[in-house]
Amino acid sequence: MSQREHIEKALKTIERSDLNAFITVDYEGARRQAVEADAGKLDGRLAGVPIAIKDAISTKGLRTTCASKMLEHYVPPYDAFVIQRLRAEGAILIGKTNMDEFSMGASTETSFFGPCKNPWDINRVPGGSSGGSAASVAAYEADLALGSDTGGSIRCPASFCGVVGLKPTYGRVSRSGLISYGNSLEQIGPIARTVKECATLFEVIAGHDPADSTSLNLPVTSCEQSISDDITGLKIGVPLDFFGEGVDAAVENATRKAINILVDLGAEAVEISMPSLRYALPAYYIQAMSEASSNLARYCGIIYGHRVKKDQDWHQTFSKNRASGFGKEVKRRVLLGTYALSAGYYDKYYLKALKARTLIRADFKRAFQKHDALIAPTMPHVAFKIGEKIEDPLSLYKEDINTVPVNLANIPALSIPCGKKGKLPIGLQIIGDQLDEARLFNIAWQFEHNTKFNKYAE
Amino acid sequence: MIIRTDVEHIARLACIELDDEDLQEFTIQLNTILEYFEELEDVEAKLLQQEEDNVLRTDEITPSLSQQEALSNAPRVDGGYFRGPRII
Image (cartoon, rainbow over all chains, first blue to last red):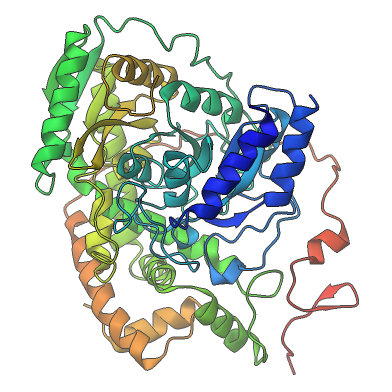
């Protein structure tokens, strides 16, 4: 098949799809690049591969909305660092994917452009906030995708859509050009149908970028080189704190079965306890909301973004622009973050959250002194119905119970399919120590190649 | 426990205009969420020493956005400037 045919096939799949996985499809750009690929003008590790980009990542000349009315017409004048990397490796940017508004959600229902749907069951959510990225890859609307993960936003939709997704170590991938939500927690990461493809995309986007001062100036270890290594003697910790109330029996069974498979492959598994994890969810939300209240202060409607027709005084104009440009969940989080940082409440909320984060990091550090990796369910259950939780914000926050600890600890974690409940995929979460992505890909590859849970795997 | 006037105050700080319906809904929801945050009340820990060093760079001039690019997304532009609301 020529690149042109390959891209046309993906574009046709998008056109016929009722998933609403894309906010913007770049038909013209994708076709132009496919012609270049066929003429041998594109080279690199991703030459001619159609890739979908979460609409929180800036693409020069291609509308980037963050799924918000606030940025409905925003066209970035520059490329994010990761986009520069993709272009340099010959990837074809097929479009920008649907997401929760400003990455705030676990269901891709808060998008200004309407909810995205789960490819396994059109009545269910794809997870979030990078729901369109995971759904598009699962439904062959793209071969690869980029998402971003502040509290689980790559791993949750990877789990619900039955694909492979990685949240890298904090600082491993540049955030330059990523529209900020909770900047001390978030990372851009790869989503793919197989472990190997996920590793390739990770290697392409990882690395130092002086434009992001939190980006690590350390060499990127090859993940592909060690991907098929034997895992005999691997020490796995199983933190029981991830199997608390609310975890579905089918999810727990699938996770335990997966651990037994890894033990059969030569790993050793021990159950452990990480008591500080009970603080993870409130600590995450306080910190993420506080950072959001500050990061989103830039949307006043003067330099870019939504602006009401009639100006009043400055304060009223800003307040009206923000009232009509932001959706409900964004307002809730900005209000709560503003409150948590306001005079008299800082010690009670923000400082407590920082202290909890310190304890959680120490717990993970202790765990990785004895264990090479930790294994747990990614999500407490399979994809839920559209509309089921949206009216109850706290119930949606609780979806993130098993994913936020990883962000608070700055460590990497990967989600890979490990079974199904009915027709809906279940995700296995493999958590590693800082900069240990290669080991996560190795464990995931071994699991994928010795099981048939990943329907996309060779 | 926060009351309606607290939410009005927070909304003013956050520069988000709220109508009556919003105020009513957010007062209830924010209380539910803040109550959940109370779970952190018993956290006691010494904060970690800052692990990261300051990142410095040499002060060199590098290419940046052109004026046209910088203004390209502005809702209102006037003679090469961003146009804000009137002050007087």
